[in-house]
View 1 (cartoon, rainbow, N blue to C red):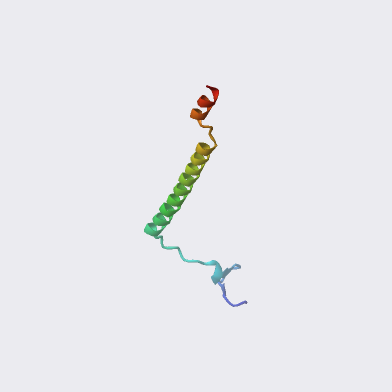
View 2: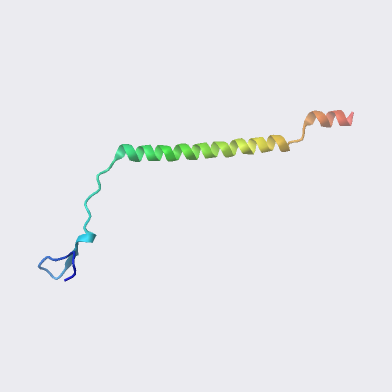
Length: 71
């Protein structure tokens, strides 16, 4: 039998590598990671919105110059 394999007496083999212990949850850390992720996404959306707004402001024709040119 290869190393790390146990004969349990039946016709099946159990490998130590396949048996893992249950993970202890760390709720505070996971919540902080989710909140950090949400905050970064929110900041990215806000920056994109501001850039789009600034671009729209610079691309928009100035109405006051059109009125003066037509008079």
